[in-house]
Length: 244
Image: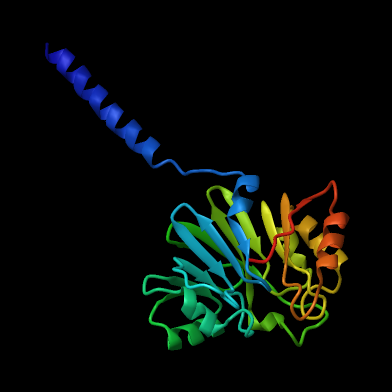
């Protein structure tokens, strides 16, 4: 009788822990599923929804009020660090992620938590792993100098690695990391030097899906996005998002 009680107790302990482990299992998605949750808002502004989280990257020309859980800023130019637009989507609970110079401006304006990252650093923010990667110009160095330590981001969301390049040319560091989904700039005045260079960058980061961004306003056209897709045909799936 005593042995049966011990066996029953062990069974209950096993059942409790196995159920608890199952309930806390990390959910996974596919790049094809995740890409549906990525919304291009024009320029480099992107909104990503996953589960109950709302994430904005470089919010700019925001049309509607929203409540962001996390806002990431890549660098300090006004179409990326737009404090009026940030104000439309931040709440008191929003966590910011930004390079050092941008963090100073954000802290001066908003009383929010700001996580400061340099290229190569990473941080778990609200249970989302965020890695900062380099973003700079090689040729047009006056626009985005490497010394400023501005960044792009790689986010791990539901098992999918999503790369937002920020403002950058094709740089050697792109061959040092990989992603499932890459959002790459097509503007050829301040970022990439050509559409072909943007396509090569998608191959460098081993993207399964590429989404062109940063075109249609001051530089780059929809025709460039179509060319980008043709260049990567049979290599990388390219999804041209409608601006929302």
